[in-house]
Image 1 (cartoon, rainbow, N blue to C red):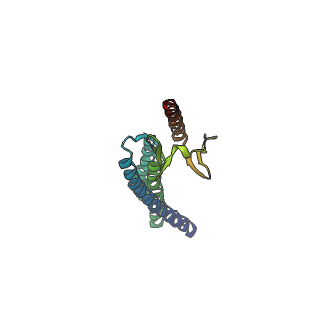
Image 2 (image 1 turned 90 degrees about the vertical axis):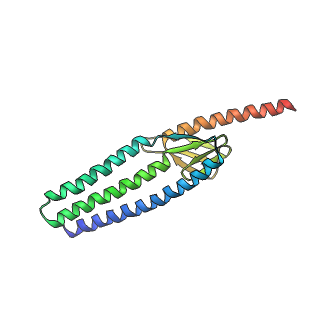
Image 3 (image 1 turned 45 degrees about the vertical axis):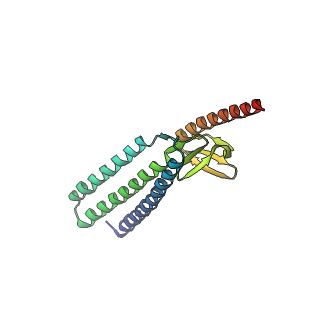
Length: 181
């Protein structure tokens, strides 16, 4: 391996390690905040579509680990061996960070008047609009006035369904209150 290849490999490893630690922190914060949310909202229901993506990411980690061990043995020089191992190590760090990100962004918890998504609880009444995803890789957008969050297509579809149910229940409750007066 030449010097440029080493520099690129080291940079990829640094990026992978940085992403891994940032997503580890995000995942730990997510777990703490989710625990509090679930303690306060016993009726919360989980919608999870992360399993398929996480399985693929774990397969990537396992394949890269095997390749990091097997391929360097066939390399001609020590420089190539270590370079190959470092390159697969970078991919392993990146894939591991993607597992944690997928875990936090492909799950949503619904309760009667709020939902919990990616470290934060939101009230249904603050939603101004839900813009569905309009492309292969574009996420859906949920607007809360000046704040917006990006969610996956499946999470957006489930959120829109829950939001409509909440609106219907709210209308029914208001009508009942008016009828009592």
